Image (cartoon, rainbow, N blue to C red; front, side):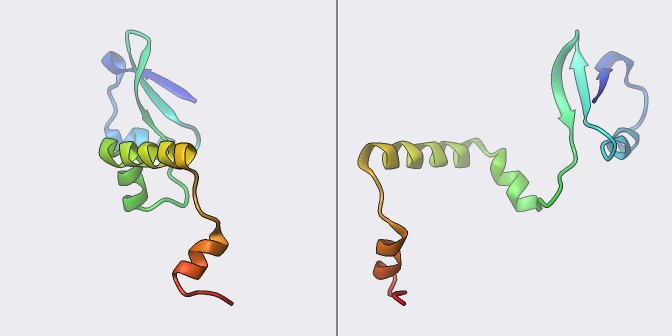
Length: 86
């Protein structure tokens, strides 16, 4: 992992992004991490966008809490409801 203090960062973003293939690049302010450049293997723009969207993450958390509180249905039942019985 490469750590760069923001006040000392002099290279272009492209230069730091090129280094991500070797290891993550962490940007710090006064020694505290504030940003990270990491490789995104097997990810598309939609996946990255959703994984950082607060509204989407809140929706997922609400769904998980509801499933925990109320239970869910089995995959067999879901197939039946969708008319996918084999």
